[in-house]
Amino acid sequence: YGPVMGFYNIEFRFRVADFQLWDNFFQVSVVPFYDIAQVWDKIREINGQGYKHSRGLGLRLIWDQATVILMDYAVSKEDKLFYIDIGHVF
Image (cartoon, rainbow, N blue to C red; front, side, top):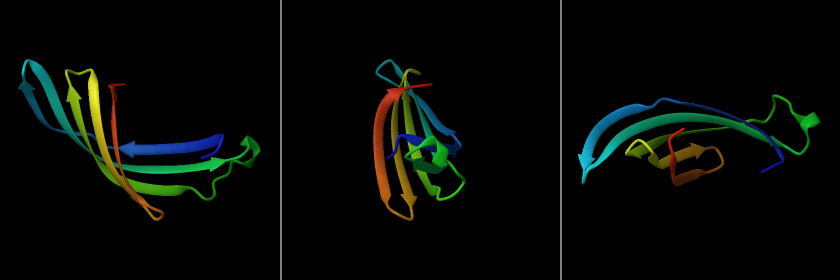
């Protein structure tokens, strides 16, 4: 964590299913991704060195095209993480 950060992400979204349940429309997507990030204490310290890399796989459940339930599992040299979030489509 730092006050200055650089974050880059590439992901591919593959819709694998659409269905209706109790008058609600759902879409399911599988999302492989690759992230690159680095943090610094000051803007003048920004450089191209020391970026951390992670890769993972996510599952997206989109509910009525407004609410998204995200489940991601990511792996890096330092750690592994399972992440769940509920938000809105952007």
